Image (cartoon, rainbow, N blue to C red; front, side, top):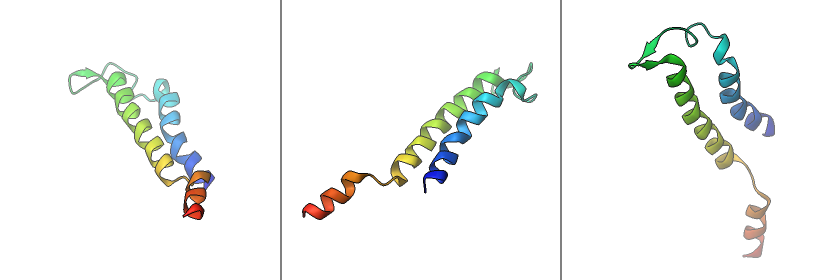
Length: 71
């Protein structure tokens, strides 16, 4: 399960690292009236938040087992 979490969290990081090498992002383009690099980074900022939320939601925590055993 840990590899799946790492892969989910690595996707936004790879997108940020690849930004200067992607010609459709790093060029004189406008997306929605804004520079394409700005829109790309804004999208992946939201994507990072979503990826980390998925990792946190699907991760098992040691405290979860302790609470169930105490009841």
